[in-house]
Length: 441
Image 1 (cartoon, helix red, strand yellow):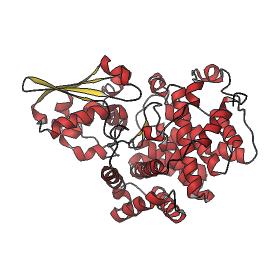
Image 2 (cartoon, rainbow, N blue to C red):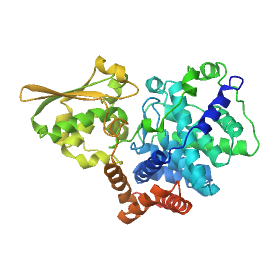
Image 3 (tube, one colour):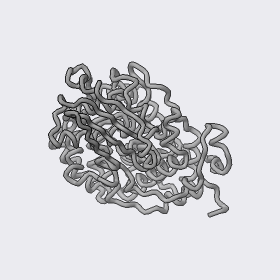
Image 4 (cartoon, one colour):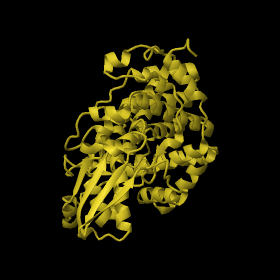
């Protein structure tokens, strides 16, 4: 393949990779739960009004944008740590919406999802996603047009040539810089949805005969235009879908190992009121992010503050899966505990990052210091959610939106959706009807 453009080589590899149906089924169901839960939030109400305004457009790409935005805002979607991307939040909603419109088969849907995951994961590693994040570049937003374009191109029946052009046209539309978190109705999730919609439109354009420059990655285009270094070897390396981490709680992934360790102390019988201090050591890359410097007045702060997550774990554990992320920081028990928690750089953990996002929790109580180290958090590839816990997560997130019976039906349909056409249609119809019609209280 040496004579081929890099994009053409990537397209060949993406389509040639195996399609592990058991892993894709878990991803499909897990992302569906995130989509449903995200769709029940107050932020989703504004997104729904924007993207579903029939007087304006409300096209298939708009519905895909809505589904992507709802999924990503949930913060319970899967994550690939080595690329620092949440590929499922883009790929699965696009596959469900575009696949339903196309009448795509279960086999084509599975291929499209697998290809979308792999292109985002590959390019995320090639662009050093875990580190450009802290330069203000959001890797999932950066790669959403490409992941959506590849997924849709496969659903449209595209071969290597069409998929390569879809990658190129998706590249023409990348941004990545979502800006700082702002008060009020922030545009972050809107941007992610629009980026995915642009990729879906790109795939449609390729299907309709438009072309694209597949030589974009052969030279220094990414560096010249976007200031991004590109590792060609990483882009062509194999990627495994079993490297995905499934979140057990609603929080920024960078906090989850620390919360895992803190909950282990609670499970051992530690009285949170008796805690004197908690020091949380993490790799240098995300000390500032989870340290809570931005406060917890906004929903995003309540996702990224590890002190807030630990406060919930101690006194309101059911709210760890609350996607609305209502503010409990004024609870005197939670606020008191938060003041005792600090975050610091632990250089011994740097070597694990970015394949793992670990934490070391030092808890002082009764004049003694106890330590728990978490290298693989619950839900990581090294500690995957077992089947019972996986189903519990889905039902806990989906039942408040779809009802207990509806959630159970969706779970059952999702288990067969990538092998049975009737189950796929039931799953698509149930998901799309719920996210388009649901109105938060």
